[in-house]
Image (cartoon, rainbow, N blue to C red; front, top):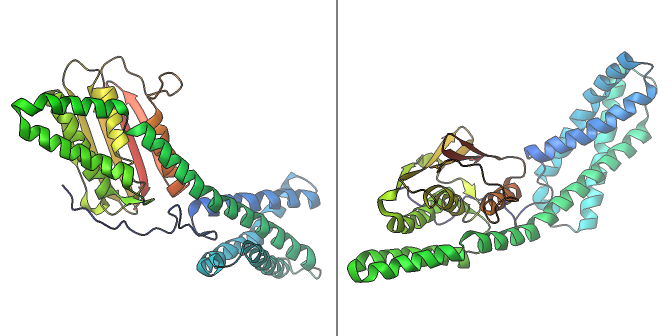
Length: 344
C-alpha cells in the first residue's frame, strides 16, 4: 500500500484557486489559436484573388499573427498573479492593451516580411486589442464557471456515489458478523466510518491519488466481507503516481461501479483490478472488472443510476483538467475497463 500524503500537490488550476489569466494550458492555447486562425482565414479571403492566393495570404498572416498571439499568452500567464489582484475592469483593460502591443508587433513583422511601404498599423492595433478582449472574456467565463460548477458537481456526486443501498448492505453485513465474527464487524464499521467521514467532511477541492487509493481500499475491504471469496481484488500501483492531483473521492465511485455491475449481479467469482502507472508527465489509472454476460457499458439513459458515477467523475475531471485528461470506458468479452489519463 503506498504511503499517503496529507497535503495534495499544489495545482493552480484547481477549482477555487484558479487564476483568470492561467493561459499557458494546452486547452487555452488551443482555443486561442483556433480563434485567431479563424479570424486570419476570413481576413485572408478579402484580399485573395483565388484559392492559391488565399492559401498564400493565410500562410503569410499566420506567420506574423501566431507568434504575436503566443506572446500575449505567455506574457499574460507570467503576470497572472499580479492581474488576479486587479479588478475585472482592469483585467480587461490590461488584456486589451497587451493585445494592442502584440497587434503592432504583428504589423511590424508583416512589414518586415513583405517589405511593404504601407502597413495598417491602426487596424492591426485594433484587431489585436479586440481579439485579446475576446480571449479575456473566455478566460473570465472559464474562471467564473469553475467554482460554482465544482460545488454543484461535488454535491451531486456525493449524493449519487455513496448510495443508501451501500450503507444498508454494509450495516446488514456488520450486524450478521457481530455474533460470530465481532472483530470483522468492528473492522468493517471502522472502515465504513472513515469512508463516510471523508465523504461528508472533506472540504478540499483536490486530493492526491495515494489518498484516493487508500479510500478505495477501505471501500473494497467492506465489500470483501460482504462477498467473501466471490470477489478477488488485485492492486498494481506505481508509487511515482501517488502525488498526482485528482478530485476528492473520484476513485471510490469507479470501484463501486465495478462492484455493483460486475460482482453483485454475478453468480460466480468476479475479479477487480486497479492499476496506476506514471508515463512521462502523465499518470494512468485503470480499473478493470469482470462482468456477467451479456453485459453492455453503462448507459445512463437506459438504466437509472448506472452511469451516474462515470458521468460525475468525467465532469469533475473536466473541471480540474479541462481538456488535459482522457477518459475511456470499454466493455468487451466479459471485461469492463475504465482508463483515465491525467497530468502528473
